[in-house]
Structures are given as C-alpha cells and as structure tokens.
Length: 291
Image 1: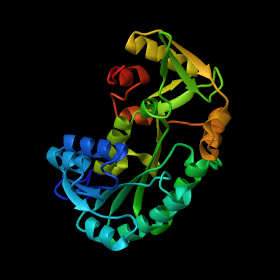
Image 2: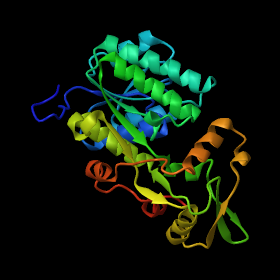
Image 3: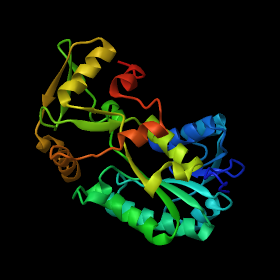
Image 4: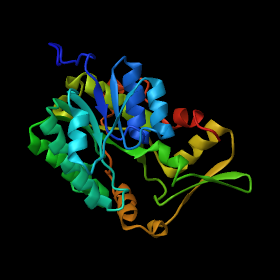
C-alpha cells in the first residue's frame, strides 16, 4: 500500500527475485534491516544459500523463471517486487530477454503495484554491448506493461575484483590487470550498495525522481585502483593495462571497449548519496574484504 507521503507500508511482503544471488541477497539484507517482510524467490529451498535467507528472516517461495504459473503464484499478495535478469545462463542475452518477458507478464497478472528492476548503467544509451542491450529490452517490457517501475542502473561491480577481475600476487607485488587503458576512469559500485538503493526505492518509489537512477560509489583509473588495493591491504601494488582481446569473449570485449570511450558510465552521484549516505568507495569496500 502506498501512503500519502509516497512510502510503502511494511505489512505486505516484498518479493525478491534471484534472492540467492549476489544482488538479490544484498536486497534481502537491506530490506530486513529496514524491518520489511521479505518473500525470497528461490529455485531450491533446501540449498544452503536459501536456508541462510530463511535463518535471516525471509520467507522462502520456490519459483522458476521458465514457469510463469509458479511465478504468478509466488507473486500474489505482494505489491512490491525487486526483479533482475541475467545473461549468464545457457541462452545468454536471448535467455535474459525471454525471462524478462515472462517476469513482466507474471507481475502484471499477479497484480504487482511497483517493480524495482536492476538493469545496468548506460542501458538506455545504445551501447552495443550485448548484455546491456538485453537489459534494455527488459526495461522496454516494463515500460510497455503499465507497471510502475523504477530502474536501478549499477555501474561496474567492485565485487568483480573478487572474481574475474581479481588481482594476483606476483613476486611480492599485487598486480591489477584490466583491459582498460591507463588514465581512463571507471565508475564502480559495491553490490551491497545496489541492495541499499533498491531497498530505498522499494520503500519509497518517490525517492528516485523520474523512475531511474545510475549509481556509483567511486570513479578511479586503473592506476588509482591499484593504489586503493595497496592502501587498503598494506601491500605493494601496480596496474597493468592489457588488450581487450585477452578476454576471449565478444560481450566482455565490447563492454571494456565502451568503458574506454568516455563518457561511458554516467552515475548520478548526488542521488546515489541521498539514497545511500554511507555509500562505499573502493577503499572502504576493500577494507571489508580479505587480502
């Protein structure tokens, strides 16, 4: 229910799609911190990640993005939904678009009032990056659906530095390698803060004027990223730019090429900080990670 000041009462659950993933988990945590009831959509309620959500206080509901009937049933009685789609499945960006259409239709049929969809920074700017374009197609489904939708558009995930962009220690020096030319700044945000922004928008849709926000907590060159690692972890560090071809993936090559053609990401720094006053910069985020 939307109150007169635009905020949403907490007596009905908020559904979180993809609750066991990094973003979904961050949204669940941020909502529970704010005293909201959470209904977490999971594929396997017996999995440890799902059980961890249950122990934190979330209600678990099993649903499948390929099965609209299970989605509609899981969404009933929940006016607010956090939704996300991913291109990392077996069907790539095409699969993401298909899931986006299924999700949109299910939400409309279930009577959802407000959706917060996690997209990507630059989705609306015709980047030519395949998974940016697939997220834009999903945005268009929501725009055409008549559902009240807020688009949260994150920049590069700081959390990528724990996975495919993870630095390596070589002869006592931490080496940060990215297919990003020296001197080119990259905007970035922590997954924790994506969850914080999404929760704020779910509780008060009016907190995001215009219904969309591109978010970031820091903007650093490769050299400055290495310096942040050095400061946070008290180790020598250096930056090495590598060619995009080392990625061996058309989607990722196009993304990093887009990064190098400024302006790429265009975060709304003021609104990001209004939504998350303690938004993390890279050094702050790194201090919370294990060296």
